[in-house]
Length: 302
Image (cartoon, rainbow, N blue to C red):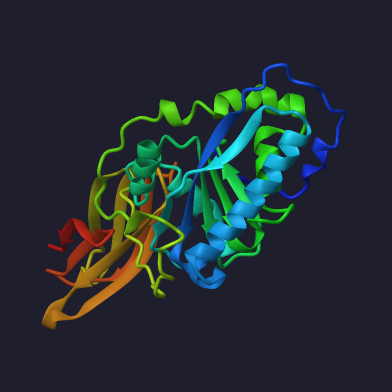
């Protein structure tokens, strides 16, 4: 599900007529808070983030209690720290999509979530202006400066759970079971450095620049050929393929005297052929197709 931006909902939905709940039992929805190292640096420290989160949760729970709603928000005591830089607006959708997928670069977050049986994961980020997003009613994303503000984290939960009391009572039981329904998480190579820690004791992380590993998108290379013209001076490169995601490729041409030329292109889902014509070639030139730094096909001009 593609994440969508929330901007029009506020917590005033709780200002509806109150009703009394006979059962005094208070149920909880547990949240595993995850922050990027960049967010902790911008905020000042992991402890500052925790203080903001505690204020936001306290305000939410007071409003729930004030309207006799038998649900409370509970933060898992330990937080998850992801070594990750600031995120720009153009990267938000992809970041949330990637972090919500198991067995990829963020698989350790899923592992910690399962260990703690957390119903939701809230990722605290930095670098963008958009306040919040959520994906599949399980992963929340919020800018660190909005986590304790009414238009931030509270608004995000209000939309996720429904701003009206009856809506919350309808949705909350299902959300509260998410942590118990989590499946096992397998290890993944190239996962981001991630750790579970006490935010009250964790030091402010050092700045880092992440070189994100390429994700192994599903693709098939069916053929990779170069068709020379009559005098063998120009050629047409033809690549037949299929893929599930857009994939950047690189083609290098190794010529005489160890001269190397190259160009980049994209494989597009739904398309099956990439053709590039009028390429200068010579006999014994070697064309090499590389995807995610791996050589996947080559062709030597006869």
